Each structure stands twice: as structure tokens, then as C-alpha cells.
Amino acid sequence: MRHIEPIARFKKIIYTIGLINFLFTFHLAVTAYIDSSYLSLFASQRFVGGIYMAAAGVTVLAFFLIYRVLKRFGDYATSIGLLTLDALSMIGIIWGQYPVVIEISFIINMAILALVSFTYDVFLETYTDVAHTGGVRGFFLALTNSAWILSPLVAGMLVIGHVYTNVYIVALAMLVPVFYLAHKNLRHFHDSHYESPSAWATIREVADLPDIWKLCIINTVLQTFYCWMVIYLPLYLANTIGFDWSSIGIILTIMLLPFILIQAPFGRIADQGWGEKRLMIIGFFIMGAATIALCFIHVPSMIIWAGALFATRCGAALAEVMIETYFFKKVKPQDSNVLSLFRTTRQIPYFIAPIITVVGLIFTSSAGLFIVLGSICLVTIFLIAFIKDTDRHAKANDGVVMTIGKFT
Image (cartoon, rainbow, N blue to C red; front, side, top):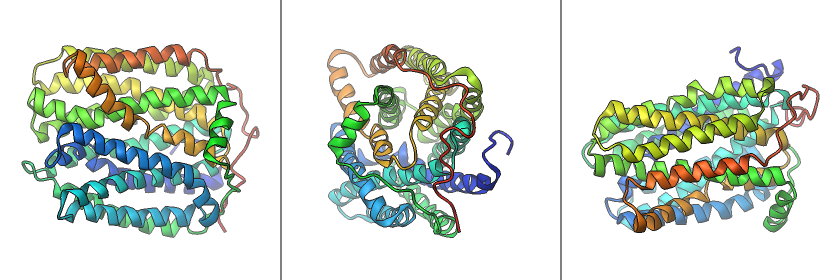
């Protein structure tokens, strides 16, 4: 592929990691938009939010321990062990006989999914040099997000009435090629030296890096947007607007197309001198304005809803690739503690999203929550304005981190 130009000896492994992560992302994404609907079969909507909050709490705690596990067992062994736990928790979700078993399995599974994604971040960061970070991350995100595009369509075809089991069985089956490819291609991975300070030391370290600290807050807003949409958008489209699941699957698939259309080319543009900060601001503005507009759409038209949601993801896709590029230009692969804290910003929103809903509904309607969420995105632009842009002229030999890990 010509859209990224990493050092030749690492091209193959970067593409391989991308393929593994594509399959793994499909495994997690195919159930993501039906999880809340499935859980609502035996729990109230408010309690469903509580389940997500519990899962987020477990995940945050796990992220503060993950670098200790990496230091002891290495990234490959850690990823394989987590995939095994992933499979076991999926079995509990599919064949659990009691609601409490399914709920606990879901909480464990959600934490494991986040940790596996983290291990692939470590693999990829080891083989990426600073000068090509935007291109590599843009390619990686585009490939990963293509799994998110396919998954709602597949899930919509597999859901029969209110029976969701088929979707989870397909998700479980997707782990087979993930196991095979990871074992075949990553078993000889040589780890970096992982730092293992305490959680409090990590927080203080990041607090001393003002731009990274701001970026963590910015990413928390973006992940809150994603989290709220994943949990509540399918319920809104089904219960308020009146779409069936086959229609919802098509709408969500169209909605997610910007993640493969935008991220790879704009990752390269960032590397060529546009600067991540400027593009990040544009992304949040589009995302916020388009989300607010959703409040005023009440007709059950697939075309209108797909188009409006497509616009929100144009902004989100641009913002995400700029955040990823900025962050990975600033950190090294051995900074696993900083990376783990950054990735916890994907979990904190599972506390925030239910609060937005519960508190928001006191003052507005379900449709009005789109105004609340969009306004939060727009306000974030003021924070982005205060981060310092990365060096737009970084050379390939500046801050090279690709020499740390290699295969034998």
C-alpha cells in the first residue's frame, strides 16, 4: 500500500498487526451496538447504565496494573492470556443461565477488550517512527474502523426479533483467526523496558506534561461522544424513532464510513505540515454542530438519519486521528504507564455517559440530549486552542523508536 511509508523492514509486521486488530475489532464491534439492547432484556435502562459504569471501573483499575503484567510476562504472552479470558467471558454471555452470570461476564469482557486493544497499541508503537506516525496511525485507524463499519450491518442481519445470541456466537468465532495470527506472527516479539511506577506517580508524571494532560481531557470528551452513541443511539433509534434492527444496521454502517474515508489521508496530511491542532479543532466543530442538529430530526427516514449521523462521524474521525497522531508523536513505546493512562480515557466516559443521560433528562427530552452532547464537543475547542502543536518538520531520524523491538 502506498498511503504510508514506514521503514521497509517493518512494513510487513505493521500490516500484520493491522490485520490482527481488524479481526479483533470486528469481534468486539459486532456486539457493541446491541449490548445495551441485549442487557435491557433483563435489566432496566438505568441499570444498564450501571452495568457499563461497573465495567468501566474494573477496566480503569486493570489499566493501572497492566504495565506490571507487561513487565513480568511481556506483550505477547499478555495478549494471548487476555484473549483466552475474552473467549471465556463470551461463553458466559452466550450460555449464562442467570442474569447475574451474564452481567458479570459482560463486565469482565468489556475490561478484557480494552486491555487487548492496549497490547496491540504497544506492538504497533514499537514499529513506528516519529516521522511516519500520522500515516501509520491513519492507516491503522482506517483499517480498524472498517471493522466497525461492517459490524452493524452484520449484527442487523443476525438479530432475529429480540434474540441476540447469534451475534455473540459469531463474535466468539472471530477469535479463532485472531489467536492463530497472533501466535504465528507475534510470538518472537522482543519487549521494550517497561516502566512501572505507581498509579499516582503516573498521574503526576502526566500532570507535568501539560499538553498530554490536556489531550487526555480532549480524548475523554471524544470517547464520551462515542460511548453515549454506542449505548443510547440504538435505543433512541429503535424506541423513539421506530426503526427495526435491519434498518438500524444499515444506518450505522453508513454513519461509520468516514472512519475509512478520512483517517488515512488526513493522517498523512498531518505528517506533511498541516498540524494536528488545527485539524483537531475543525473535527470537534463539525462533530458538535452536527450532533446538535440531530435534536431536530424526528422523521423515521433512513436517508436523513444516515446522512446526519454520517456528518457527526466526519468530525469525529478527523478529531480521532489527530488526537492519536499527536499523542504518539509525543510518547515512546516504553512509556507504557503514560499510554495506559491515556487509554483509560476510553473507560471514564462509561461513568460520564449515564450521568449525562440521567441528569440531562431532568431538564430536557431524549432528543434534547443531542444538544447537551454537541455543546460539550464545541466547548472542548477552547481547550484544544491551548495545546502546543507538534513539530511540523520532524525528520525520520528524530526520536526514532522503531529500533526497540524486533523479531528474530
